[in-house]
Length: 302
Image (cartoon, rainbow, N blue to C red; front, top):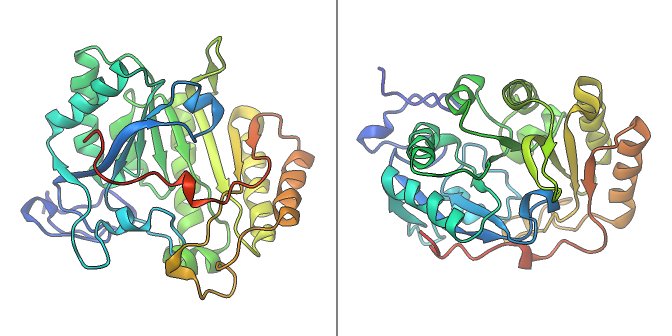
């Protein structure tokens, strides 16, 4: 029973150590699709040199509109597996290589289902000279108990807060309990790392930045997200209001998600957040809904 996986809120309870897979689609073998410098995170994360981003395969949430849907599924449409299998030792080496390449931080993207392996690799890397901050980049759909395995190893939490609405979270992410889960997860993240701290270059060294991707036709729920975050944390966290929603092929016929967010929709959400009193955060100017922001998941750096 002790090997049954309950790392994420899906609580699949399958034995991934013997090759079984649950909702995330992955066994306990680490699969990584890309490990490279990434320039398109928030300015305080990417900086000029880039963020050392590691994209893990599989995902416990798998939103229907995901721009990284192939690696979230962990396979191509023909069923061929995506990514390269690596060991914990190799993951440790990747962290150190990214530091050598000048990365401002190590950026762990969708690592929920690999938290124990990530924790071990980080401990090994820090023992061998990893000194740059570690970013945990997540959908927000996390178990508090699993996040506690990362305490003292992660410096910056970069979670999404996607929805308040149960209807939206059920339709778009098959997770009716998303808000309940994500709000508890963010509370734990803030407890672990505290208020944001920046260096003299403006790069974040510690703290929480909560991302919210504005979706077509969902400004009412976006406002509810910022109501919650403001009332819970105020300026003790940073927010990032994202407008790069890109309609992907898999939802081309959806009545709402098949179009981009309008300028008016995005501005309404930004104006509302500012009206609450937010001072700490990031907004995006101009047209950013482009597939060019999606990197190639071709195994580079792995």
